[in-house]
Length: 383
Image (cartoon, rainbow, N blue to C red; front, side, top):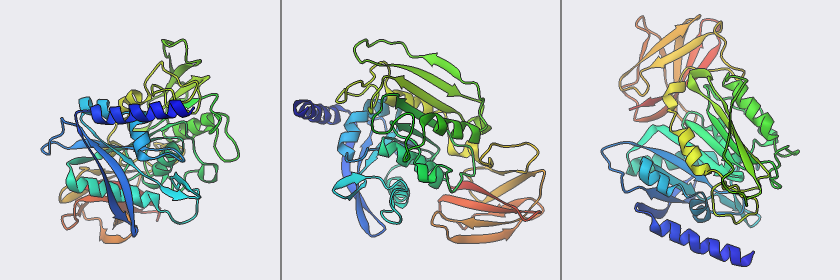
């Protein structure tokens, strides 16, 4: 095992150094603590064009360097032109991890990752409409946590060998729009068992929660992944639950015989599936989605056409936001920043518009107050 780990570290260094783009190890100050991260910018990047940003989150006891090489998104980023950031979690009990609702209070990892988006945006031309998160194990669990707690900034997530954490499986707060999710999981995962535990929600239950939330078709398109590697002791089937609200989908790669590992990566763990590349499939999934396409969807059990539907446009916007309401009337709105601070409050005028010209560029939440005193929450981008 020691020789395998040393070989992996050598391959890790070779992978990072063999890419054509620019890598840096840096830190930002978040909630009074300096938090570290690794950034990879492809050679194809130019500041004249905005590019997507993908979070690549490490697992429990791991770190950004190991995860950067293990998932190896870099050659994909070189071709597709997106920026990869692999942050470091914090240390508790001697182990580095992500606080995905595991410990009450600090460390404030949701705030850190939101701050990190802003920091990277300050140096690079990031398309805030195309920010995604994926991760391994604890990093995958954290990605689900972001879907629940940072849905106004993350367009879609993917989890490899992770699942929803039982204490917050009902996803509170509920995202105010449809949310695309991909899960890649081995049936022989001994760390985050496919069938679930008292700590982890079963994978099939996790998938069902999201497809019901997105109002996807209950009958998936099913693809058998060609078993091209006969020595990895595993094979996979891809289930695609399509036609959700605003085009959202949920995908599952069920790896029969697969372990707690990243398919397509160097097999430092036995039963690592080598029939497909998880990183390639994750980017294929992510690239379909923009945050703005989901504006206006609401309701954890799916959208019902008889219920109120609120849409705002354009999104992103410069000076004016137009509000369209179906089966209801919007009387007034409040604008809230990502820290929960109320920025503005306006009554809706006869043109159904609100003025946002005084806002600085970034993401905001708009709370719409309806005629029956109900509230609908929608996120938007101010250019």
